[in-house]
Length: 154
Length: 167
Image 1 (cartoon, each protein chain N blue to C red):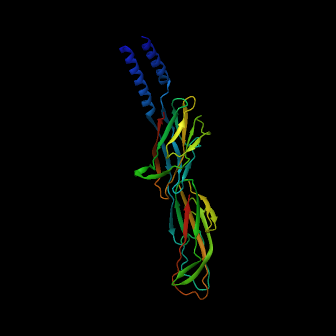
Image 2 (cartoon, each protein chain N blue to C red):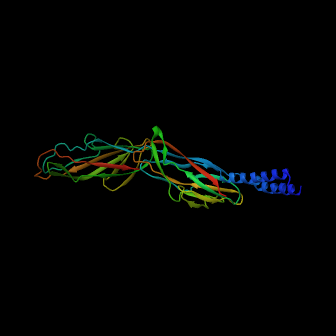
Image 3 (tube, rainbow over the protein chains, first blue to last red):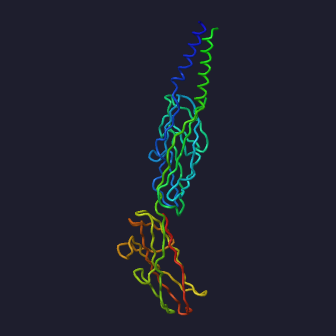
């Protein structure tokens, strides 16, 4: 019976952190907006642009680490399947533990990046980029989907 | 150790195994990237700059207001949008290796197809700014002067004027 009590106590102790642990979640909270683009003129959006940068909100276990991986499109698609090239530079993504767009650590969105969640288990990812319309780019609305995958690290 | 204790320890082991599994899982979130591409610019030469018959030793001018003979270009693009334009102008018209000097270029730009209500310009290779009309139009009218010397060989002389416009 003594062993049984120890075992039950250990089970309870081990179960507490798991039960209190926040599950990881990621939500896209703002579209990466290039706005009005003119043929032949590249349009650049900075990851520090509050109005235009793409934004993701992350939640996870406090102070824990996770790996971020983007799935980035190379083009946006528009009318009659016309495409508009998209480029992402080596510092076009940024992570902010404080979720402040003014306080980011830049990283290459084409490479996996390890983050640490804040003490309250939060963080934000910001994304800029460049749209490169050709000189004869067809007029119209263009869109693409950007996906961020977050994997918890032990 | 009794059988109940063994069951509890097995449960504990499963609990740790569950923790590892949670750490290995990934979650996804998505956003869109969007852009609105505006109308490309088109430039069309709509009327040749025509001097007609020219006589040796007698300069001849065509004014940009000459509806029948002035050179004309029309530009179409995104309404109310600034553009930069420049001209490539010949110094001579040519015919079988002979030159006929041309110069004193004068012009006019307007958002409507008219030589009133717009602005006089001096056509040149230097980039100059303008703005497309609300409907995305811009018109250029061009005049110049040819100065044939007294010994100008007879012939049909031509040259090319190019207008380049960009956002």
